[in-house]
Every structure is written in structure tokens, then in C-alpha cells.
Image (cartoon, rainbow over all chains, first blue to last red; front, side, top):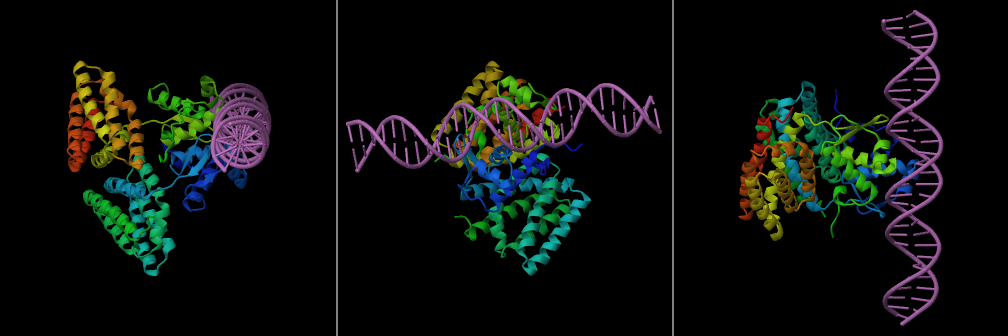
Amino acid sequence: MSDKFFSDEISDKYSLRGRVFHKIRDDILNGKYKEHDELREAAIGEELGVSRTPVREAFRQLELEGLIHIVPNKGAYVTGITSKDVRDIYMIRAQLEGLCAKWATEHISEAQMQEMEENVYLAEFHAAKGHTEQIASLDNRFHEIMYEACASKMLEHSLKDFHQYVYRIRKQTLAQGARSSASNDEHRKIMEAIKEKDGERACELAKIHMLNAYDNICKKGLLD
Amino acid sequence: MSDKFFSDEISDKYSLRGRVFHKIRDDILNGKYKEHDELREAAIGEELGVSRTPVREAFRQLELEGLIHIVPNKGAYVTGITSKDVRDIYMIRAQLEGLCAKWATEHISEAQMQEMEENVYLAEFHAAKGHTEQIASLDNRFHEIMYEACASKMLEHSLKDFHQYVYRIRKQTLAQGARSSASNDEHRKIMEAIKEKDGERACELAKIHMLNAYDNICKKGLLD
DNA sequence: AATACATAGATTGTATACAATGATACAGAA
DNA sequence: TTCTGTATCATTGTATACAATCTATGTATT
């Protein structure tokens, strides 16, 4: 079975092109390549020990993911995310995470429910200790569990795209620490609503969670 | 200005790779290549008079768009859209088109508003005459105008993706004719709400419009 | 000095050649 | 017969070669 619809889920992470693709993506998300940087095929190919061909193919995919944009016959440039983009993404996510939470309520498996509970529990522990690294990782994972639990390849794919898109920003936010406990409280409430099979409440809570997250980013002045 | 974020808007429709990409995409959307068909690089390259290189690059993009999926070392296959996918897409679109209508209310330009009014007016004319071809085209365009009017590259990109994704189905639906006048009435109401700057109402109406469109597809038994 | 043009270098775009992988068919053994 | 291994072929994956395009520099002309 396992209809593999989307490339980043085909997990060809071990083919050459796949590795190149993921490497460049990580380098962009982690800030090695910054906004408006120009990426040269030959240079990157040399760095990774491959020819231009797989690099070019990776570029095409990165472009569709919105991480770079290519000007024909000229070059590939790291895409800038404006503060308006971030705002738009959070508003879009507010809608979609709501839908996702609702569907997750209907389709979540035992194992997923359990992982979600563990996640919330563990996050509280690390929040108390101030372990920012683990908090960030658990926060990410919480949302991914929900994406997977909604049992919709289409929605999962969209949300993962947006989620990743604001990765850079989110990393900074969570490093700030202050919000992490508030955020985790919201996770807990969403989790409980899902567990009690109250789809409408889960939907509402997930929406609010996104709006709060965005407010937090604005307050911290993390956008330009 | 004109930050060109997404490849399909870079309109490199005139480069070789761009032409190949759009050609294959159209062939899939118009049904020349059907679900589960295998696409061979060499064959398509020969058909279009180009080498495998641009074909391969086009494949990578089509994969991320979700129109084909690639099994490493094996081949490229036209993606199947299940009836559940269609349902999911319409539910997602219901959320996003609502948001879009709301934002369009805030940002629509004079020219866009005028084109939208013309669109509704013309569609009524063609609906009366039973011109299915023009109706389909105007229906498409109505939504695109709204996507452009919302002034959000992120949302526009997402919605265009989904919109295109159900193109095959929509074509059949509209060919049925019956719903076209009901659908256009809904367009008119959305248009009026936008014109009167009533964002909330536009949002609500756009959502309902999607749900009705989906109901219609189900009733007609167009899904498997 | 300022502008237009020409030329050289760098970079991307495309085609081709070769390597690696997977599918198929057939032969032989259990 | 059925299973297994091998050889062959078709197809994809990657590297390289060549063509086209853009950028920059320098020169000539006004």
C-alpha cells in the first residue's frame, strides 16, 4: 500500500540527489546560507563532492519549496521571508491546524495518542529545567504527531511545509524560553481535547495556539 | 520589486525546462497521462525534442507539485487522486478560500474588483446559453482573481496548488451544467460582500461555496 | 568625462556518455 | 513443476562536455 505522494516523504534521503537536497535545505534553515545569498551550482557540487547535475535537480525542488528562487540564466538565491510572510503563514496555519486537530480527534491511533501524552509530559520536565534544545525538538514533534494523526496526506503535507518554513523564526522564539511553558500548557489542552474526542474544542484550541504563538513572536520583536 | 518566490510564477515558461514542465503538467491535467501511468524520461524527451536532462528536472518539480511520484531507480508515475484526497482538498480549501475572501476584501484593487464583476456578469450570460467551455474558464478565473486580490503570496500559492489539483474533477463537474448557475449565484454573493467590504460575510460565503461545490461532486457521483 | 561597444570570463542551460540499478527471461537443480 | 541463480536488457542516476547567456572590464569615440 503506502501511496507515496510527495517527494519529501519518499525518503530518498539516501540517494545522491536526496542527500544534496536535504543538505542544502538544512543549510538554509540553519542559517548557513542567508537571505539573498547566491548559490552557485559548481561551488556546492564541489563542497558535497558531486557534479552539478544532482545539485541542479535539488535546486528545482528547493525552488518549489519556496526556499530559493531561480532567475533563469542568472542564478539561485535564498528566498527572503518577510515579516508579512510570517504573519500570513501563522494565519493560514491557524486555520489548518484547527482542521488538523479536528481530524486528528477522529483518526488518532493508540500509539500516537500515547506519544502525544508523553510529549507533553516530557516537555514540562524540560521546561522546568530550561533545556531549550529539547523543548524545541518536542514542540516540533508535537505538531508533527498531530499532522500524522489527522490521517490526511494532503493536509499533512501542507502543514509540514508551512511548519518548516518558519523553522528559523521558531527556533529563536523557543530559545527565548519565556513562552515555552505557556505554549506547552496549550499543547496539553489540545491533547486533552483530542483524548476526550472533542473535535470542535481541539480545533478551537489549536487555532488559538497558533494566534498566541504569533503574538509572542511579535511581542519579542523577532520580526525585523 | 516583484519578489518572485515560487517557481511557477517565475514564468520561465519560455525556457526549455519551463516548457517541458508545463507541457507534461497540462498532459496530466488534461488526462493524456492517467493515474498510475509510467512516464519514461527518454520517451518524453524524444516526443518534445529535448534530451533527458530538462525532462528530469521537470519531473522533480512535478513530483513536489504532487502530480507524479518518483520511485528512485525505478520510474515516475502519475499520482492517483483518491476520493478521500478530493474531499480533504475541498475541506482545506473551504478554510483557505474563506481566509482569502476576507483578505481580498481588505486588499482588492479597483481593476481586480472590476474584473470580478465582469466575470460574474459574463458567467451568467454563458450559463444561460449553456456554453460549458466558457463557464469553466470563468469559474477558474473567478477564484484566481480572488487569490491574486488577497495580496498574500503564501496563500495565493497554496490555493493555486489545490485549485489545480482538482482541475480534472472540476472540469467534469462544470460540464454537467446543472450546478453552474447555482455556483455563479454564490460567486455573485461573494463578490458583493467583497465590494461592500464585509470581510466576515465574504469569508463565510466562500467557505459555504466550497462545501456546496463538494456536495455537488458527491451527488453527481463523480468520485469513483 | 561620459557613453557606447567589444571582448573575456564566469555561470547557467542542454546534450551526451558512462555507471548503477532494477526487471525480465531463461536455464538448471530440487 | 517450482524455485533459484544468472545473464541480458531497459531505465534511471551521475558526470562531463559543449552551447548559450550574462557580467564586468577596458577601450574607443564623442
